Image (cartoon, rainbow over all chains, first blue to last red; front, top):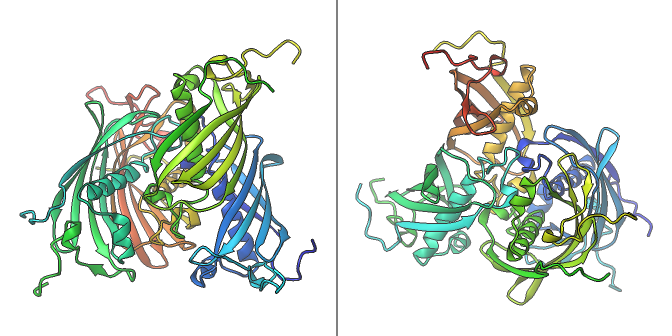
Length: 142
Length: 142
Length: 142
Length: 142
């Protein structure tokens, strides 16, 4: 599918350091915390486009995660300086897909994919507005 | 101060097991997680009185923590079976005070005190309704 | 592949309640926390077989998550009573695969799959011992 | 008590943004997460002195929290840009005390105090080495 002609940024790099409390007793980042890094990556990508996820929620557009697929290749450790590449890979009326690559230096530690949907406060699927990277109103034929 | 004649339960015991993800790389429960145990203790104490914290929030009564004081005496570890004693120690129109003792067997691991207030959705201090252990409407002289 | 003739339990149900601190500002369980529930499901399944994950770690056998695939179908909310079904679906010398179904009543909320590997303290892949559901020593031909 | 003549930095400012996953369903930072911010403040203060907490742990010096006292004055919210001031206020052979002030702009949101001790891997109290802000070896009379 062709990506729509919206002005959102398609790729973004976020830099951060692993916090002590994110590590488990194996001395590595607990596997659940990477999802929090990815979420932060999406939010920063949106911000780089000039948008604000908090504002979306105030307008009643809630972004929910429908699917995550994560490959853990090598562990991140306390105090590591990490670089997260977040990329929009596919957009439809109701879903946005992202890819993530998390690096320490040149080493790829974790890669992942997600599918997000937008819902209203009642949990009903909405179309994703163009200003947030979506294609806008659902077409009649949907 | 005399405790009011409401029918809430004044003391409650909660039993639970330490989860793997709650431990840090020292191999002990991270010091921040005990606050989550204490919160769960308050919620279970309220439930034992026949009330439901979720319902309070739906009615627009938000309970917020104003003060916490925590003494960490001995660490809890992964898979420990813990017993938390939660006690209401003081009640006023606008605040409720609790005490907590967390045990593994007979060993006291952590003890703490908290002060809670009730606020509405705009963050304004409310009186705590009697059904939730409070003294009810603020008196005129307040 | 045929499942090996070890005596570990292949399926287990865990029951628990959603904690307040696990919910985000959408009023639903944050999507990262389900991985913590799944981890707890694996640990309880192991315990039901008479084994103890903490003991494995003391022996220097660390279980690491290599892959997770999660479908979020409907959100869990604060105070929901949930039932998690954890199942071992495939075993090889170096990996164990699990499936998870998380229910509220009869409603399937989240389903997921994981692949785990065992590593030693230096991060080197080990064979998974039979007492933990593995096939034992790597065969010569590997 | 007079502060010892060690070369550690006595005060440090850390800047960070509230993450989405740190907020609860009241739409504010969950009260347990501030302890994670404070921990990060201590680590950054130590780093500003040229020391590395990870290295301390590798040397077998574990820093544990013995006491925390926290006053929550106003809530931090998603995406807020916060400034944390972390200060060493007292040093003895076996303990270090810190104070914390967390600000959004000029508004003081949370203030706290902590007492930390150093223990070895067996959990026995150690003296805190001068390079980490301590007074060094316990004197004979202790």
